Length: 278
Image (cartoon, rainbow, N blue to C red; front, side, top):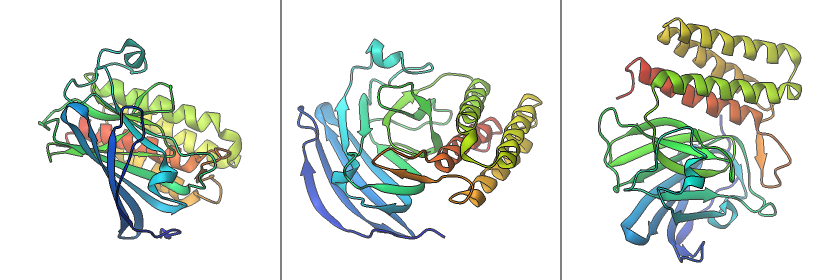
């Protein structure tokens, strides 16, 4: 069960995170057994969004420690577009969100952070190609969507750390997206093989291989069940055999968080293929 390490309440406030004097009006508080912080973002040209970050277990959380900023971007910026695996930036919502906590800010969390964004600048329709993407600062963007739906447009994603965030119109076939998410999960696992016991690495690697085979063979529902088993194993070993801590000093790899986030967005795409997502 998650533990609340820090409880707080913020009154409404305004900060100016960039030279463009973009306004972020925020309130924060405890919701259920997790800690969440909610922010309303208002930018020029009528761009608006509500952002909620929810943590399973967190310390040192405040609006200031998050290092949150937002800016209007050019949807045709080739430098930005080159960081996408495909697709485009919706002209109705050219907003880049950035969460870069200060290394000395004292923020830390265990597990995953869930990010939900809601905007009335976009409209949700069935079969919408809109997805929530994330990237390390200046790095390639990848799809982190775990849920989306109405409320104009609403999307939720999970991460094992912080980054830049964009809403992207992604026209790639779902099979291509699933393969890319499997590839990324394998890359994360292989790059951190030394951070876990050998038998656990072999078990997780074998499960990813099995998920890939199920997907390639058209057994989508079986692949979803195996993703659920993968997630259950990672959660079971989190904090013991799998490091699960992120902190502002960036001296740790939140491996369990990265694996869980990658598996959760993979599950979303598999469910989309199986027509289990509206």
